[in-house]
Length: 141
Image (tube, rainbow, N blue to C red; front, side, top):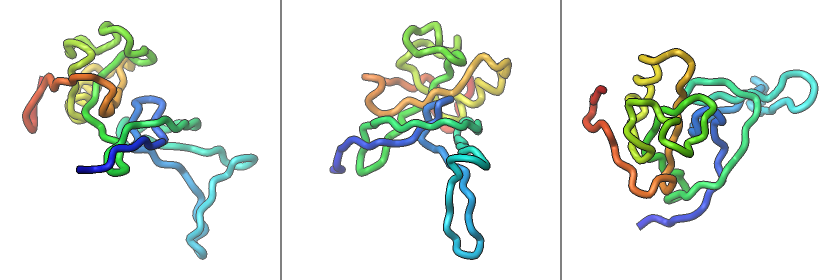
């Protein structure tokens, strides 16, 4: 059995993923890095999941298992909408308990690329009893 604990993690403000990177200047001769806070370049961040750049990042507390946050699936939601009611979900998702794999969610966004939809990462504990709408290795809608 693993150890359950709380962990603060930085996350993407667009999709909620914790797979984020920070731009840093590295001294090639000493291999030390630094970020520039004032003057010069602004801090810049990048999300590996939704592939968006952003300049403001926050951390939030997650339940974790053995020091790792557990992602259980993804949803496609209306851009800028809060997941409070089912009508902020993409019409191909039945209700807020339905989850997709990352590739399935990205497939929906790519097929409906009108800028209205975005990826939402769902972490363990956020949905009481999640269900996967589409199963199988290469399931398609």
